[in-house]
Amino acid sequence: MKIVVTGAAGFLGRRLIQALLAREQLTDDAGQVQRIEQITAFDVVPLEGINDSRLLVQTGDIADAAQVEKLIQPDTASVFHLAAIVSGQAEQDFELGMRINFDATRALLERIRALGTGARFVMTSSVAVFGGALPTTVDDQQVWAPQSSYGTEKALADLLLADYSRRGFVDGRSLRMPTIVVRPGKPNRAASSFASGIIREPVNGVSAICPVAPETVLWLMSPDRAIENLVRGHELSKAQLSRGRVLNMPGLSITVGAMIDALRRVAGAEVAQRIAYERDPAIERIVNSWPGNFSAAYARELEFTFDEDFDSVIKAFVASNRLSEMSY
Ligand SMILES: NC(=O)c1ccc[n+]([C@@H]2O[C@H](COP(=O)([O-])OP(=O)(O)OC[C@H]3O[C@@H](n4cnc5c(N)ncnc54)[C@H](O)[C@@H]3O)[C@@H](O)[C@H]2O)c1
Image 1 (cartoon, rainbow, N blue to C red):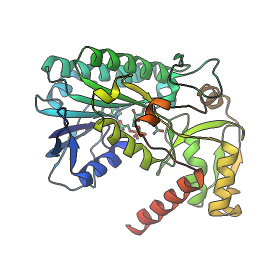
Image 2: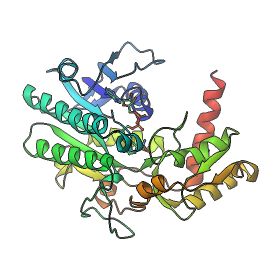
Image 3: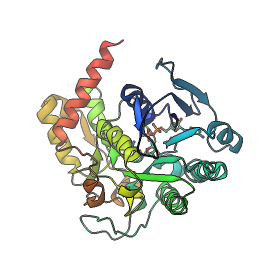
Image 4: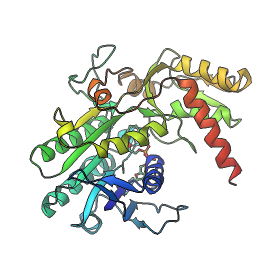
């Protein structure tokens, strides 16, 4: 079985590839478990540091039709499409966001349609497709009303995937991910970047700015659960997805203040004191337009996983942080 992962060098892409290599197998269209023979890791920057004979690293622009044609072949069984421009950057650069978050998704779906393979296509959407007047808990019937270009691009991609799947051009699954916390490394240009920063920086002995009020409610998922859910999204049969191809993922609803309380419990008061509130209206406008809680009933029925509490999310981050420090 040959698999393509786009956005392979990114936060989730790299982890997904490691998980797929360790797992060694996935289920095909006929419900048969197949060995993974090859994973093509595609990104605009090369995926480095994973050595495995099944891995083929390719670099290029996913919005370039010639690259897409080369990347998706008649024997590509499954695509995990994770390449994206994150929310803050997509808001600042409209053309870039539309090109990568929408045009490239369409090009990939079109390529599979042209090949006639009906390949499985798992992609990541976002809670940013919702906005406006929202109930405290958003259910699976909630009308989409994005308040940012990123949310609009993700909503457009969701609609395309649903229609291409309805017509049988692809076997699509779009997972609406909560904000994934704790992201290691440096801050990125997502409006939600602070949600990881207020944990990661203090744990690493660095001060952090929290740009939103402590009562801001966030919808979160840990990286481990996100990867498990991407695999789960792939493994479901078409019959199991009879109620739709776009799924709100389950998550953890928590206020920023409660996140900092959890950090104090897990890492100590001295660590939590490294956070200072400095409100940023541009970030608050985007983040406050996102729902803070979902029923995610459909995805829960399909046994997607979620984090039970935030203390465990921090503990998992601290443990993996120590491991990566030890490897240097
Ligand atoms: N991390 C989160 O909190 C979160 C939440 C909801 C949805 N998502 C979605 O999940 C997916 C993965 O997110 P992530 O956090 O790993 O993002 P990331 O920014 O770490 O990774 C995205 C990758 O896409 C690549 N990319 C950008 N432009 C490209 C191009 N023109 N051609 C090829 N590759 C290109 C980047 O180099 C990067 O490695 C994205 O679709 C994102 O929108 C993420």
